[in-house]
Length: 325
Image 1 (cartoon, rainbow, N blue to C red):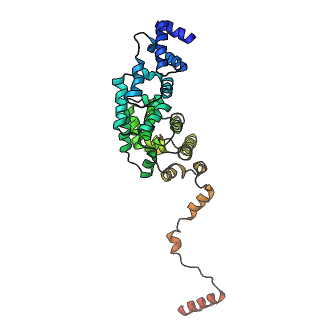
Image 2: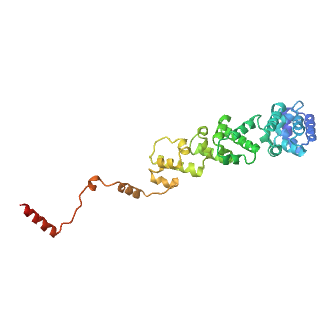
Image 3: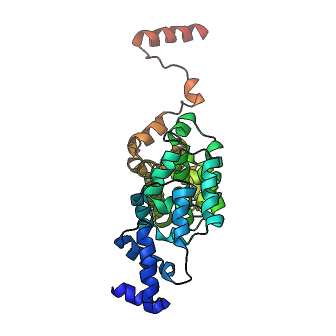
């Protein structure tokens, strides 16, 4: 009652208008709790010349026939009352026409509408078509594409929309978000929590901005614990010891293969091998192998063999020299 009185005073809604519109909502199948919910989120629906909410309810029930029970209408209005203010010809009709043109299963659309009304009704006209075009133009391995489409095209398009909205929420424009998913379609399979963890690691630990994902979208497809984190630890140790003074870019974490990263950053510094996860070498043994692996000099190869001189040999040499004299 306190909320009703505050809203009524703020928007100058008379008690007669409130009761009249409340009666209309109850006749449309809305419960008392849903009426209060609508009043809290969309008080303009209770004004004398406010929103004609009955037309939106009638549109869902009789025009597109996507719902057929008062319980479903009540659930939709309670979860997402803002849709009662959407223009029918400018928003709702184009949306459901697009869903029909794309050939989505009507049962799946109805299920999503009743379970998550804000997700479906919040889709802009043309948005799902762009998501479907992205899915149809994916250039990836067949198992990945089959896994993305395993639950149907409609479910996959919704997953793409969720990730597009998520990336845009971090400051990317929609064009760049679509580009990232096109280049790295595995991101469609990852949960939003996993993507959030990778973005936070990119911003906080690696020190790069979210705009770097446009140039290196394959970063989202890497494993943080097995690929990115060990490389970061190696780089931090080398910088602390003064072993490198070069600027390490995101490409060194993403584009270098494990062998190339090992040869460039780890192999010259055996103390980093334990962190990187490779074989641990003994520095002294390695130095000894370096000293002994080189071939002997040519002067050693061409030196004459030494033979031991016995008494008999010395006697024969004296006799031979006497004959010469």
